[in-house]
Image 1 (tube, rainbow, N blue to C red):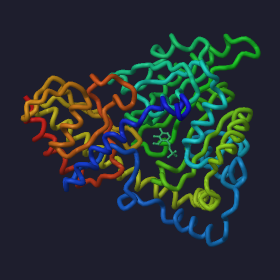
Image 2 (cartoon, rainbow, N blue to C red):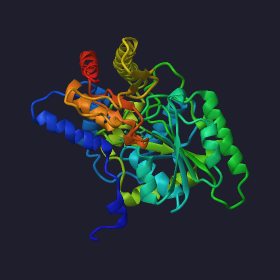
Image 3 (cartoon, protein in one colour):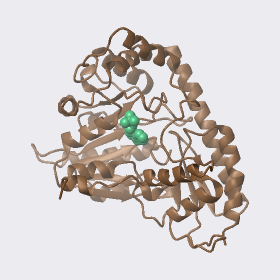
Image 4 (tube, rainbow, N blue to C red):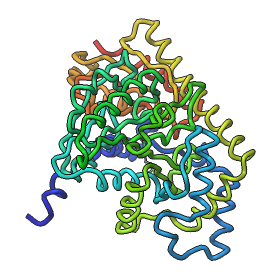
Length: 417
Ligand SMILES: Cc1ncc(COP(=O)(O)O)c(C=O)c1O
């Protein structure tokens, strides 16, 4: 055994496997519309020019040494002001932690709260919680969700699992579904957490919520809701994930933040410090300056979310049209993020080559080969591979790309018998 048990048992990314298939077809000269990656094509969606110029200026100003362990004070103050203005969330700069994108925040929440064997609850489908559970040795409690509930968990789904649990992972707008919590639904979940914590003994570890709102500024008219705004008594038990990666199309800039109770944030700060997962100093300086430019920020967000919404709606309408024509497809109206939840219910059907599609992965590979469109089956986010729902991610596609793919999907599906 040359590596640790942990390393040996790490699960590979399903999305990377699909990516390999796409790359192989590209090598053969085929053009595939890649709706698999949760990223942006910077030529379609560049970061704000003021942020880009600020980063360059910060390097020219030699902002290249270690940043403070919890992030530049200026940035933490600006994050706190931004959260107050945009979401009415009140946190002090000391309750904010900056890291290199938001993944280290997620990882440090797990390390700060979860002991081996602790129960961690998360919905299916969901993004990456399984990997952090694996790394921390948590007992995973996976809660299946349904299309009728927009693939978000309801209080009744979660209630049977809360006794003694340590962490409840929630995300809205959600990756992979692009759907958002209704206020009443999140309130009911919050009330369960409050009741569970009230039942614990003094000194017992409480139940925490990890609330991932990294897509909260990318919404299409629906109000973003969050636990502490709905139930202020959850402030001591909720740690939030947020940052610039998605709302500023800045996935490669690597500035993320988390916020929550100071006693937890201070431990996460030490963990992020040991990982050395600080955001680069120049990027922090530039982000702090950018967040102060109200007009630029709002102008960018309006334009960016408008464009993403248009592309998602076009794809949604395309699937609705196919459904109306009698194809076994469906889609859930986009609410936020860069994702559309689509269905292609073709398990058991036979391709013109005589192959039977036995799983969502088979359907996906058929669509890649025949329609030149690559999606991600929900099985990559933890559901069974008999579930025929898929994530379509639009950050690397233009409106024209999306318009052109619907006839190809129609043609490919009509060949299945
Ligand atoms: C829900 C969610 N949270 C967090 C992240 C991590 O973002 P970052 O690139 O800032 O690490 C992602 C990235 O895909 C995401 O989808």
